[in-house]
Length: 137
Image (tube, rainbow, N blue to C red):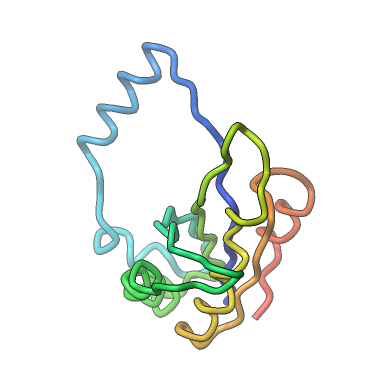
């Protein structure tokens, strides 16, 4: 079982029909409890809010990370083979800036979770595809 963090930098653009369909789907959301029996051996993509204060490369407040732990642990305990976590800290003026990287979150999550966490510094491309496909322990 593995946990991965991906910097989520994608912007979604909706056409009117897609937006209507998406809004209808949101009204029919299911919670984690409804899919627990279907997680065994599956890769699970999860959006988390890891927009935490970082100073000098160190996470200053772990509250949001800690609050995500029950969900992550539940997915792992119910057989998810690969949990992919997506979040973002920002990209001012559309430019990558290391001070907005989620990299400092990975070791904190790894320590709190007690499992190896792989940080992936992008949201698309071959490196991301390979990392997400892998099922390392």
